[in-house]
Length: 284
Ligand SMILES: C[S@@+](CC[C@H](N)C(=O)[O-])C[C@H]1O[C@@H](n2cnc3c(N)ncnc32)[C@H](O)[C@@H]1O
Image (cartoon, rainbow, N blue to C red; front, side):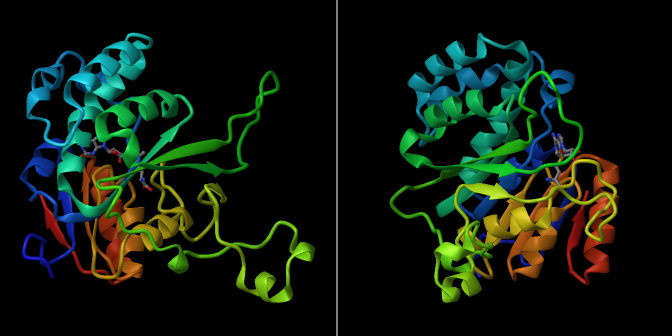
C-alpha cells in the first residue's frame, strides 16, 4: 500500500472542501462525484471569487487562459455561475489529489454539462478529456412539448493523458442490440459498453434502494470503478449521498474515502456499509 494512503476505508462527516485540503496530494486513483446543482446558490454566493486571484498558484492548470474562458462562460448564466463558484475550488483539490494514472468522473445533468465541459477543458487541459458518457434511462413523467430529458452526462478527465489507467476488459458487458448479426460466441460474451449507457434508475421498490433521494445505481458505479481502478486502489467520492461509490468500491476490492455534510447521508451510508459487512472509520 502506498505510504500516503489511509489504512482503513473512511467516511467523513462535514463540508468536503476543508476535508479535501487535508488529504495528501497524488494519493487517489479515482474520483467520482455527483454534486447537487442547487448547492452554490445557498452556500457560496460572493465567497469564492478569491479562486481567481489564486490562479497563479494553480500548478498544472491553465491559469490565465482559464480565467478568460471562465469570465466568458459564467457571464451567460447566474445559476451556473453560483454552481461553478462552489465547485471550482473542490475540482482544484480533486486535481491535486489524483495520482498520475488517475481519473475524475463528474456526474452532471443537461443543464450543467455543456458549460462544465468548456470550463473543464480550460481547467484540466483539453488533452485530458477522455469521454462524455451519456447515462440514458426511461423513468418518470414525460413532457409533451419537447423531447423528454431522460439522460445524465458524466464528464471524464484524466490527470495525465500519457499515463492514465483504463482497463475495459474488466468492465461488465451488456447484451447486443441485434444479436442475430454477431456470432453465438459474441452473444454469449456480451458487448463492451460504449459511451452511451442504458441503465435503469434505482428502482423505488428494488432491494438496492436506501431511501436517499438522489441515490445512483450500483451498475453505473461498477463500470466506472472497474475501468478506471484496480483492486487495492483508493477511490474518493466527496459528494457521497447514499454511499453508492463506497459500497461498490468495497464489493470490487478497492479502498474508499467518502465525504458528505448531511447527517442523513452519514446515517444511510453507515447502515449500508454495516449491512454489507464493510469495515470503515467514521470521522467527524
Ligand atoms: C446528488 S447527491 C450524491 C448522490 C450519490 N451519488 C449517491 O449515489 O447516493 C449529492 C450529495 O452531496 C452532498 N453535499 C452537498 N454539498 C456538500 C459539501 N459542501 N460537502 C459535502 N457534501 C456535500 C449532499 O449532502 C448530497 O448528499
